[in-house]
Length: 160
Image 1 (cartoon, helix red, strand yellow):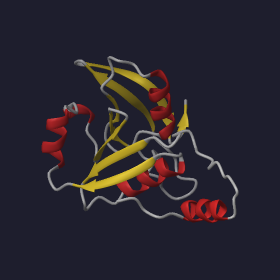
Image 2: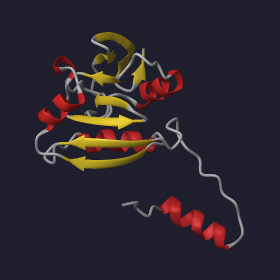
Image 3: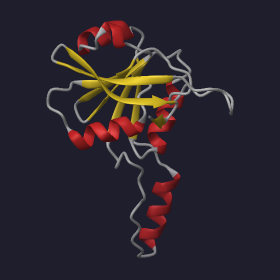
């Protein structure tokens, strides 16, 4: 079900007046993202908000048995986090910054099944602490065809 947003209302009103508005988008370019998450997880909402602020269109699906879902989708056990998403046929595991997903979609590597941030690093999107709290440095891992490699490095949302 599509939600009616403030942007939709503005565009509809402008259309009624005969104006043409091209909505500004972040780096996500309007790509659709489906996120499967545990209904009791609080940090997933922060990551979803980060993705939406970056121009992605996000749908959220609550699942009780995330481990079985991750097994079914082929998410490597050592890269698992609290939620799994899909964008343009790529899997996104955990708190991957939108900048890394945008880079993945620009490159479209055929050998890559997805990107992952294992665990829940402090300062990663959705895991921000109070202002001024230190952010962990972490790797975004590309995975696929039994291989894993560092795709990008971050400290919080800042690429290193």
